Amino acid sequence: MEQWISFISDVGFPIIVTLYLLHRIEAKLEAVIQSIHGLTEHRKAEAGVQVRQA
Image (cartoon, rainbow, N blue to C red; front, side):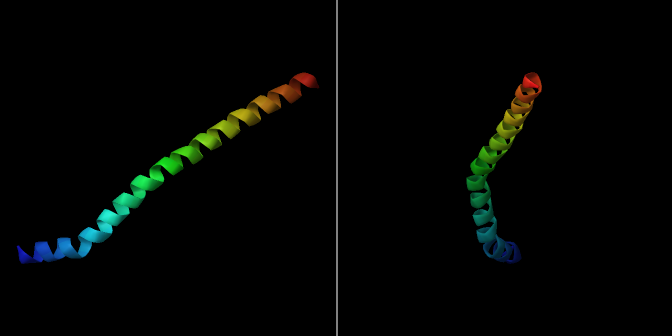
């Protein structure tokens, strides 16, 4: 039992910090993904406009 408590106290802090940072960066990654999708749609629309004008 003491080994488990020692293990949790040694490894628990890095796990908590990692989970906290992953939670914070999740929203930022979602914004990047939405920007990439928006850029793709914008480029498709832009290419469609160029084809119609030609």
